[in-house]
Each structure stands twice: as structure tokens, then as C-alpha cells.
Image 1 (cartoon, rainbow, N blue to C red):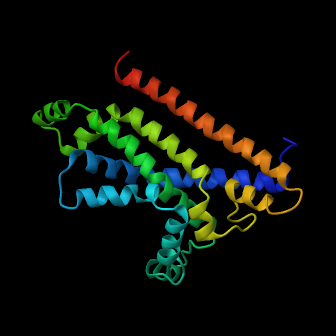
Image 2: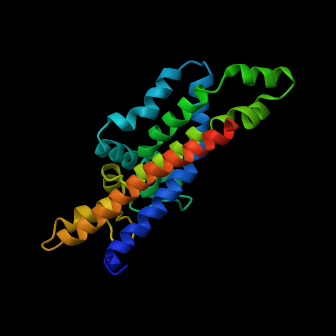
Image 3: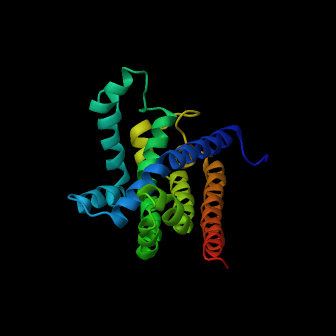
Length: 230
């Protein structure tokens, strides 16, 4: 595609890389948290629910600053990890962490609603036949909640692709290292003559976002039809 220059290609490739790892690595935790909120009763449940959804309410810059204070090389967690050679601040891995944090609420919400839609009587019936709780989850709950898991995963990926505020605060805007599509758009708009490149990336962002929404809808319906035996 000649209409994408080297800088634009770099931003697109990095965004795809960041979004992929942000989504894949947060998916197991997202399923666990969604199941806990949907099925378990425990002290601090509402607090956990609030923490999970906090990135949706806080300004993204605030979330990025909290990540910087926590995971930066001088932060309590970041300094410990740095001693082991693991650094997130001002690295693409940090961009993946920021994107994962911002996309996590959407993933958890979609999966939680899908799990809550599963009839608990089906789980209870499997348990009365002697199935262990983990086996009940893997053979009953998880397959029936699959449409929501697929939808939540795709929506989280799309959200990660568009993350800007938390990312630029936590890992800055370094070309070829942390400059994702939103950061590149911002950078292009700061220089004379950069409007064309910015508009190209805007179009890419819109296409990816709409494609993700449509894909989520189509796959969700197909998976739901298979689960329902239609």
C-alpha cells in the first residue's frame, strides 16, 4: 500500500502488536474476574467491581500516571521488576500494559454478562453428577458463555488499538518504539504538512474499529447459534 509511508506503517504494525498482546495476555484474567463477579459472593466484591471499571471513569492520563508511578523504574513494582531486567516504562511492553488496563473493563463486562446469562441450573445439574467445579466451568459455563468471550475479546482489541491518553503518559511517544496509531496522529498534527498522514491513520483507525465491531457481531451470532444447536 503506497499510501502508507514508513512512519505510518511503523505505527500500524506497533499498534497491532501492542493490541494483540494486550488482549491475549489479559484474557485469562478477564475470564476469571468476570466469573468471580458473576458467580461468587465474597467480601470486597463491589470494591473489585469498582476497581475493574475505574479506567472507564478516570481520565486516561490519570490512569497512565498511576501506571508510571507504580510500574516506572522508580515505582514500588517497577523498581523490583527492573532488578530482574523487566522494564515497562517507555517501552512497547508498557504500551501493551496501558492498553490492556484501558480495555480490561470492556472485556470483563461483556464476559460477565454472558456468564450471567448461563442458567445456573445447568451448572448445578452437572455438579450433582459428580463433576468438579473446574470441570463444570470448562464443559458447561465456558462453552455457553463463548459468544460473550469472543465479543469481549474483539472489543478489547479494538479499544487497545485506539488507546492514547494512558499510553502517551506511561510510555511517551517514541517513534518506532511506543508510537502507536493514536500517538502518530497526534504527532503528525503537530508539524506543518502532517495533516495528510494523520488523515490516513484516522481512516485506518475507523476501518479497524468498524471492522472489529462487525466481526464481533458476526462471530458472536455464529458462536451463539452453535452453542444453541441451531
